[in-house]
Length: 242
Image (cartoon, rainbow, N blue to C red):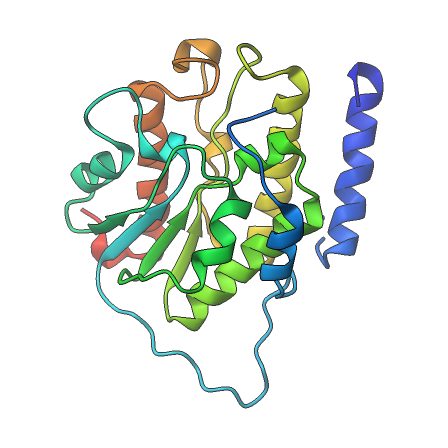
């Protein structure tokens, strides 16, 4: 997809994927999509088995974070997790699972069995998957499986959406365009599944000046993203807000 035909092609794909998934729709690493597809067996819509016992809800003002390098750091000693803790001292960050280069589809196979303690679980991963062109149905069904798992554990899932990047370095215009498409699909999916969505793509972005290397937010932009996440958490956990 390029230039004049790009917007039309994206619109067609957007509509086709939403229909197929039951909706209204070169990077840091690679993934074995075959093995991930086998591991992610749940559909792209959350359904409850009739008669199944409701999960015991986890209580308290606790949060843990999953993400790639964008969630893991910002070029300073204060990581995004630390910033969130500083901004919302009443909301305890119990674990920071963010690791540079972690695609959503890399995280998925071990997600079910991973130990967790927090009530709110934030997932930032996924933008690298968009650059790699992971099939959109797999992309959405991977989120679905994780969301279903968290809800089965009595936890509250929160999606950030994707920070913005700029063309340059390892990123082409196609990569940036794919980021936009996948982020829009994820936003639509979160709304349909009633999942809190921080909408990092809506945060003020001043272009390359906000980035360290065309990909990673500098401290100023990172802080704006974390503030947006904190505000989103305020809406679902007002008792935990500062």
